[in-house]
Structure formats: C-alpha cells, structure tokens
Length: 110
Image (tube, rainbow, N blue to C red; front, side, top):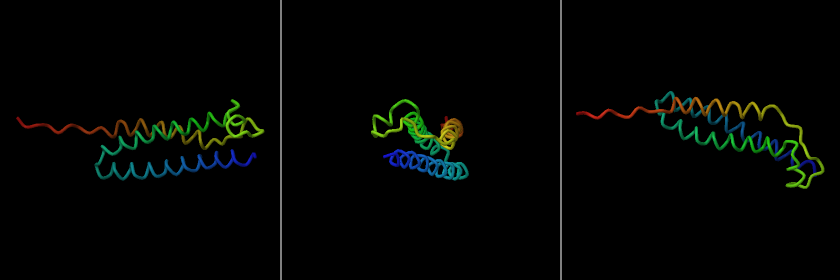
C-alpha cells in the first residue's frame, strides 16, 4: 500500500513542474508580444498552483494525514526539494507577473 502515496506525490511534482515550464514559456511569449494583460491570468493560475503545491507539502508532511486519508502504514513520505523549489519559483512568478502585467489605461482625448 506504500506505492500509492508515492505515485500520487511524484505525479503532483511532475504536473506542477510541467505547469511551471508551460507558464514561463507562455509568459515570455506574451511579454515579447506586448500582451501584458495575459500575465495577470497566468498570475491567478499560479496562485492556484502554489496552493496545490503547498497542500502537497502539507499532506505529505509528518502530520498523520496520509495515515488517515490513504490508510497507509507510513505517516510520512520522504519529500524532494524539487517541490519546495517549484513553490518558491511560483511565488517569484506571481510577484513578477503582477508587476509586469499592469497595463496603462489609454488616455482619452479632450
């Protein structure tokens, strides 16, 4: 029964890493094209990805959640540093996309 939590953990790490690569690629594309407003949409999606990453870190921590949720004999799975790095990169991206995604309102003629 120990294999299911490990598969779920590494699946989450892989999905969050792929999202990060996808996000950076499209953010650079939108920035190069001058479509800065789209960065705010990615910023919002990054907030959700960060919440998901933090939930995975919490769920696989030493708090008994795995024993309760998956009925596994282990109460803790050894976590990798990649998820922590991914979460910090998401924090930086959220801040950068917030500031770079601002679009000035067009000036009206008088």
